[in-house]
Length: 345
Image 1 (cartoon, rainbow, N blue to C red):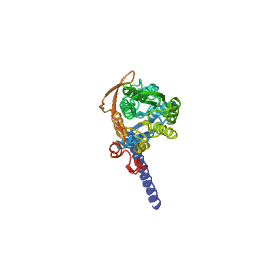
Image 2 (image 1 turned 90 degrees about the vertical axis):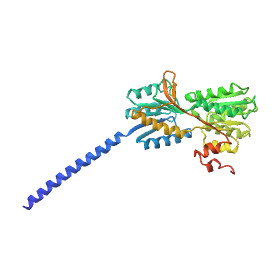
Image 3 (image 1 turned 30 degrees about the vertical axis):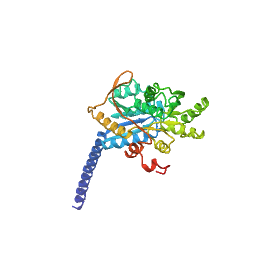
Image 4 (image 1 turned 90 degrees about the horizontal axis):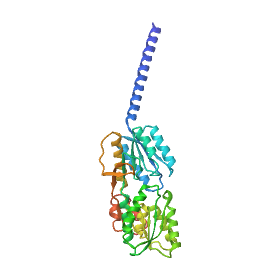
């Protein structure tokens, strides 16, 4: 009788274990199913050489997460080939949306088409991808940025002043737009361009070289337009070595902290604030909408040399010593104690 009881208890225990395992398996499958239901976004940055990209990344990821999406971020370290490999990886992983900060605006159309062939939505972030028919291009208006930079320089140098220009690489479509904005202002003046070059890979040290090359061509000059604040910083370093810092007008863009500090110190004339946190958050929101198949509204379209693609462009703001507090500090872009670190204010 006792043996029968033990056998019965063993059978009951076995049944309980089997039912429990099945329930745990079902629970696990349900969790996996829920995870698979989350929107998957792949983001490939050209690099993190430019200071602002890390801010863009953090805002994009946090916003997307809040909206129920997972984000896989990759950086191509300036390599077009590596960026194409990352896009192929995202395609293989079945991402819902791929966001691309292009390493080369003219060489990614085929990779974009491969993604679109798999039903994956593609967003060109900050830089337009040529001939690619992306689902959305979202950026700051670079032509306006160029115009603001040139206007600031013109208002701070003689009417027939001498200047240099050192921009970013031709592989960045924004450089062409930036240059267009600059020329729209300078072409109406008597300002002489002594030296002009393009920093390959946005290499900041090219700003240092630009100043030295300019001074090898002329004894003095009045201003320099720099493709971004990293380049401006190196240009100022070279000017300092020639005891010209604060005597030559310097303009840049991105409102990097060091640029804001130099504006306070009086050795950088202006920078351009671009609402990148708004840009990144909007991009994440639109990525989620595209993944869900929802209709999106845009400012219009832009021609990518083959297709008219939906486009959103945000407006930049020129930042000088006069409005720095209002634009940079009151908005929370940089802290007051950081901006005024090297001053008595």
